[in-house]
Length: 611
Ligand SMILES: Nc1ncnc2c1ncn2[C@@H]1O[C@H](COP(=O)(O)OP(=O)(O)O)[C@@H](O)[C@H]1O
Ligand SMILES: C=C(OP(=O)(O)O)C(=O)O
Ligand SMILES: [K+]
Ligand SMILES: [Mg+2]
Image 1 (cartoon, protein in one colour):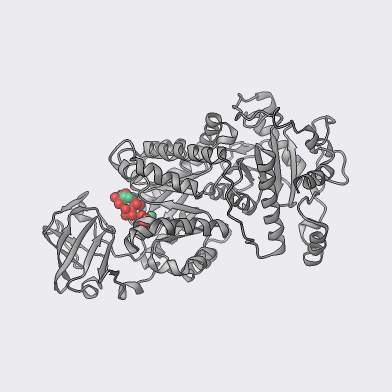
Image 2: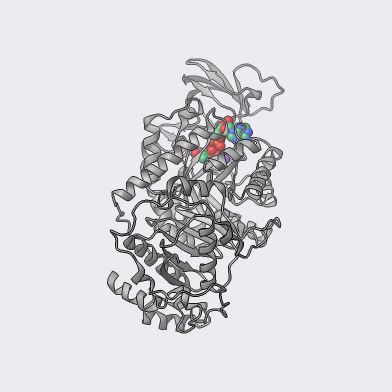
């Protein structure tokens, strides 16, 4: 199979790209290595107007002198000759860099290619093949909201900054979002911003400004829907849901944060509900409340609350105006709400492409999982609230199921909550936490998320560094063990053209593994082809080149993608030559590296050594 592919490649790739700029026909760039003649014929019938069948745009001739060289496959050194060591970066060569055309970035600063210092440092530190594949999301809170603290997170590997609209006011969030944007503009980072809605969950008020309160065994506390003047009366908690005192019954169990503290309802007095503490614990501001009757979570009128509240709609307008990259929707129950929000965003923000992430944390979402994920641009396994709605022992299998489903449906998935909970207070994680992080990495989730650890913990940078080092170690172990998973990827494409892209990506990832390629390069305008490659979880990193900074940020959530912003044309040869020169100049690749290159303009695969 491989040898057949290999000969097809050899034939279609000859002469090598460098020389082929001057030998126009047949173009190696139009090699449809994975499309059979029959498929091509079908494509012709089905999509005569498609770019696949069009000749590539007129070529620009390159200024560099062509050096005749044998086809790439013949230049492929033997497995033994090829160094298996991850190569180290060399210092940049300014003379090469000066030859290159620079493009102004949106700020007018001349930058031919956007890549951030953290990515370069990771490549330098770990070598090319050992860069971290698992992406990291950090919730920004009081512990991390200053520009310096945000920069420390970005340098530490934060790919996405999350702001939680449950806490803080819009001015505070605006400050954080703008600080992240500035960091990206000034330091070349591509940190995406995710806004997480509050949702209509039932939660406590903010404790009148206290950081926490302790509930002791046997104490009687009042949970009330009244609006209080400050200071709050002693042992009194305000509740945000007006129907609370009507929905609960004497004898119900009231769980704070899914069981961090537990109460029994003993008396109802108009808006006030008296409860006796049966499991002592710490009450935190705005902690989530669930109530249980006969062993099941109670869903009375509270189940009819809208997933997106009127306050959430205002927050969403704010997020659109601030240009966030992702909106994560809390307590999603059905696909309808996601479709509704997506069409709202499309109407409100023409041209912008805010991705909608469905948070899986409501028991009702579990029966509609596939439909919800299909409708979304990604999912978050929000284990905090999920663990308050289903028995805790069910959370691990639900997590695994969602990770696999997202992979099948080609949607990025984030594993969230309590990954390193003890690091809110302590500088080292528990062994159990490290095992939990390892499991999420082993499942090949796209991203891991910090909540309190980075929002209000004492050691946000250390927590991030634990996620980073555990990810790198487990990924390496996985590759060393060569545990190519048995997961068979089903087709995800709805159109024939998408199907071609999908097949090309599947084949390219397989070839990359089989040949021990150093990287896959993908030139992608919308990012779709990059995500299809990420879905295959190849052994080598995927360098994704895209013309838009917004697409670059969005790709930063996806497994194994190293996104670059680069202006490129429809001429793959010039794109490749330019990219090789730029990356060589920065010491990010070197001559001889084996690269598989794809493009979503031409739907082609090329295999070559970096000249
Ligand atoms: N913007 C903010 N302002 C103040 N505190 C915050 C903010 N964001 C997060 N926090 C704190 O960090 C904790 C963890 O964050 P997160 O997991 O997002 O929220 P929650 O615990 O409410 O689900 C919160 O409980 C809160 O104490
Ligand atoms: C991530 C979660 O959501 P939030 O922090 O908004 O409660 C969760 O419940 O795990
Ligand atoms: K939230
Ligand atoms: Mg939640």
